[in-house]
Image: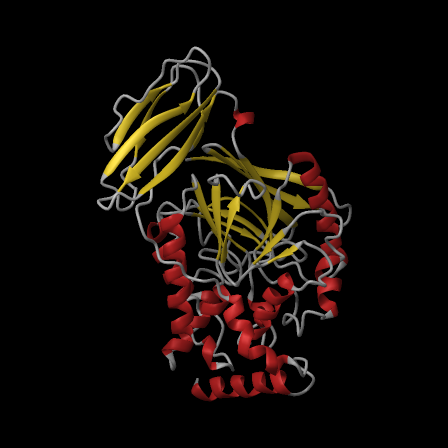
Length: 456
């Protein structure tokens, strides 16, 4: 295995510095690209107010139980009514306790607030909105698509189908779960593959695409990763003043999307965390600073801190690699059933051991959905004991579709093989609606095949 690893590094080096691999100016980019591609890690100071209810559709007569026990560093609590409908006499049952009750007595909109303070007198607030009319509540709608970056007719077909779906159901943005540019990513921000494999096929969609990296975006040898600097160039493209459109959004290799995105001044309905699984799955990188340990620890500290600060009612996460899958790649920790034991660190990376560990440490139980691609099919999989409380959406049929290896490996709500398609997510108040659509590659017809509701 060590001989194989050395050979991989040699081949990747040839691709990087010779044989016309990356452009000649890539060496000058190496010194700055990586730090620019990683988000800053902010330390938390002061209390953080949080409650179990944030945006809720209610009915007259509903009695709600509020709980602020997840607030951080709080010693004093204050529940208050900021605004209520005409004729309402509703008030919190207790004002200064960690828990309180509230009865909805009139139709309309209620604006409530939790304020907390710590021993040093520092304060923080958590805004709450109740309404008997769901149209008055914040809403976030988006499409999840992955593994599309071929520039083929099938990708154009899916792009047009998505445009029709968004015109009918509404979309605020698109989540790309990776493999944005086949086969090995891009060489520079001027690489013609961006235009051919992304901008033109999706020109019918006037929406931002929030991107993460897949193994084909960091491909040193084929699509097997090992050349992470290619991923940094995709981050650089998002910042490039001459880029073709505003569609490509990727502020860092991992980052947070507060939604609704058009209301940045408000506390979000949902925080969506973009995770770079390519950093913790690819083989040894030819550039030492992409070593696994510091990358894993930095991304872990970043996500812990972001979740701590989040005041969203919903938290979701997306990345390229699967936790569970009935496709050929399989479940994290045992990708492709690889039997590699000579070099444990290398073996653990390529088998997805670190993806499994990362998700179990930071996503499982905290977030209801892990959204991924990697498999070129559609799957909505049920939770398992190792990741209780989280379910798994695989949406990798954006331009290519294949069969399942074992359709019964994991229990599913729904799955579709050998069909192009996407998922649509609609969140309003305490309700998330997940819809699975297939796209006919010949006619372009998009069909709703699956829908379920998650309550929070």
